[in-house]
Length: 300
Image (cartoon, rainbow, N blue to C red; front, side, top):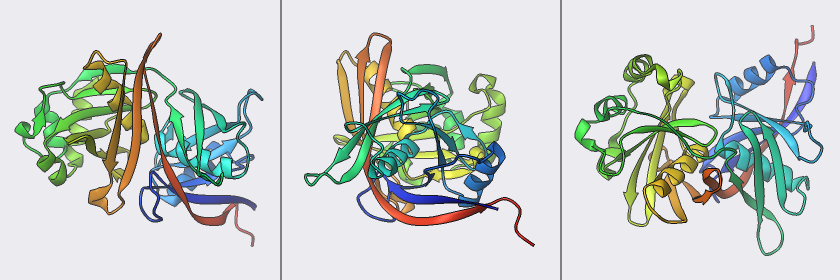
């Protein structure tokens, strides 16, 4: 039986037991794909990360991200939290880490306080904005237990968007956001009815709240009834909002997780680059747990 150390952190928060919890295995050498998936399922968090040596020594690490059911090409809070853990172990180079992931190379800038202590990180999404199919407002409303009139389409239709991980983004009223409740039967129906979704339907609802944005994310088909903070959805949202303007860049603060009792604050930015619209997301982290996982057949 092999023993693997892990730590957990709460991401996109300055308060323990807020934000989005993450389990990190800082040295996952020797774990099989099946063991990584089993550990992620055992933790039962939105995601668990496994750190491996990089293929290119110029990079910091190869990072694999698993949710409860499958490996993910990219995700937001796992990168921020893993960067926080590795930077506290002094694995950054001049405040920068570079993670090799399925979706591409993720560059992370470490945040520190005045005393030099690591407080969080900001990640640049690995891909420019890619828009997929638009979906009918009534179908999206049904997935969230809402009425068609609750979905706001003045700026854009509900649309699949990605900067490395795909979500359906939909604007709703503030009142509707508060009462949204995922209907797994409707999620299955919509996923089956739109093959262009490629079997993935994670729904990111947002509402404008003055200068800030309030958001909620539902992915029941991937085992996440609701997510308290979703950096890989905040980034395509920022890029989408930029696409609706003529500005060179936009920045927005996104509040998520309030309805779950795990308030989170994400700082998202988007800018125009030569290859399209790029985005980043950052926030604070706090350490929570340390432990060891036993992997392999039990003795005796």
